[in-house]
Length: 194
Image 1 (cartoon, helix red, strand yellow):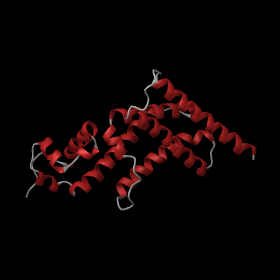
Image 2 (cartoon, rainbow, N blue to C red):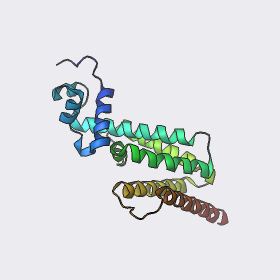
Image 3 (spheres, rainbow, N blue to C red):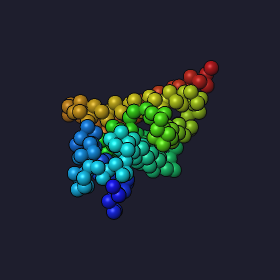
Image 4 (cartoon, rainbow, N blue to C red):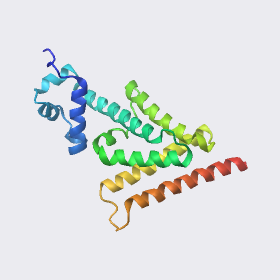
């Protein structure tokens, strides 16, 4: 069967991303994407390697989109200002692209080199942002894990309605990030003292 004229992989990924963001990742099926594009399901196989291939493309898309947003937010900033901007952009991405965000969370399968490379670029961006703190490479990686855990934890709790007290969520988030930054400074001081 020949590919539909005008249909391409990017259109398919965009349609699948819209489904993921509005209905959740479990709603992303080949039938749902085909329906959204007003095509027959078999037509998708000319562009994607079934549902696993589509999910791989969505993960890659999500990692690239997140990298772009975080990199733009941090442009020209350094130190605490860069970390705060990155944290804010991360939370905004999780809020506005919930389905795609979910697909960025899993560690990439080594059998998916493009996805693995996109994940490495994202980690590399986070490590670069932390360069100003004078951490060793191992400390920087541990610190990136911590930052990711903090940001994901907040985004996840917010998404499921875990914050019901009448307190400003953005203020809670600011205090959380400031506490993290104080921890980085403490690690740096500890390293300088030894």
